[in-house]
Image (cartoon, rainbow, N blue to C red; front, side, top):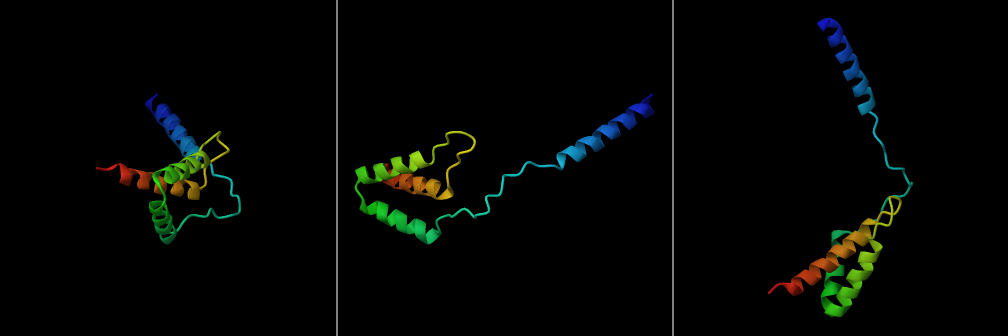
Length: 97
């Protein structure tokens, strides 16, 4: 009886191993997603520092809207997230005492 349990358990492990090697993959859109370089991000931060607080808040709100996830098919581009982070950093700098 113990031998039959061992065989059944081995078969189940093999089956689980076969299924676990298959992974879901994101569909390839064929184009590489564009991101800002470190130099570009520094330039964005410099430009934001020259704006008024109101201007940076508007930039932040626009970036926030672009980063909104409506459903599982709409995912924000990396550049939009990077812009949101830069605006947040600038607002955070002004907030510190």
